[in-house]
Image (cartoon, rainbow over all chains, first blue to last red):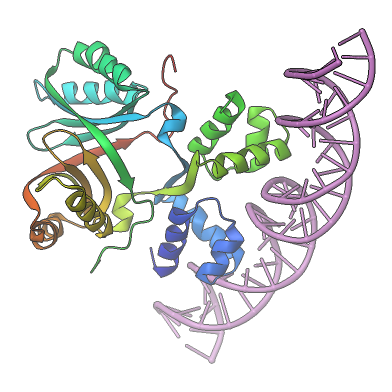
Length: 153
Length: 153
DNA sequence: CGCTCTGCCGAACAACGTTCGGCGAAGCAC
DNA sequence: GTGCTTCGCCGAACGTTGTTCGGCAGAGCG
């Protein structure tokens, strides 16, 4: 992970669909070199994939929420099972396994408030290991897809 | 947003760096048609961008947390200012503007616990509009980059 | 000093992106 | 039904790109 790798990664974070030649030119190496570096980054697991960022409303996901969940007992079995369950639900877009008073935070999106409510009542609250959950609606969601490098790192 | 558009979007969510020809073949149209559709999706704002998914540890972001923040007074001025402030910090990877008992949830990542703590104490708690914040460490973060379509949507 | 290894380069060829003219189906007025 | 218009898809063509590979230069080392 030298400076060249970082530069390539930064470019791919910014725009994953620009041509390898463009990236090579921007980072100052030959296209073949850039391609080989990218291949290695992928192989090493640094680059995990390339994904289009889609407007949620276009996917009929106009309403988003964060759901904090407590499960009991706090055993590996229960945690893994709930994690797999949550990750498998189509309304769930992300699962955070947490330390602190909540065991999970689940990022959920649905077409409208009614369907969000139905999801919570019909799907989520069915699970017996859940002892409590709180839902907070998301008004806005700003994601940084090309974060500035950390200071002093 | 017909079935063809959806199929193209799905493919680009799955792998944004596959060739236009591959996508065209998978969704069953000519490459030129696929390209035109993709161009329109981008123009309409359905596709907002293409980004590489990078392993956080490779970016020196081994520790992640969700920070729930309350600010006062709850005016547009204060909310917008804090949102811009948070989004500008390099440790911040996402900002959620919330309804409910918390006004913001901030997704933060740092190199280690010390630097996370330093960030919270030196940067975040400096802001006078913050009346309270709670930090929860993230053990695991599962993100679904190609979510299954919503049922009945 | 000479050897080896590593990583970068440039050329070559197959594959690709992108444009454009044309064509067929759908919708509509009459 | 018939003629007209419009729209979206197709396939060909051309410039550009991805990908491979042989070679070379510099670093490290004995």
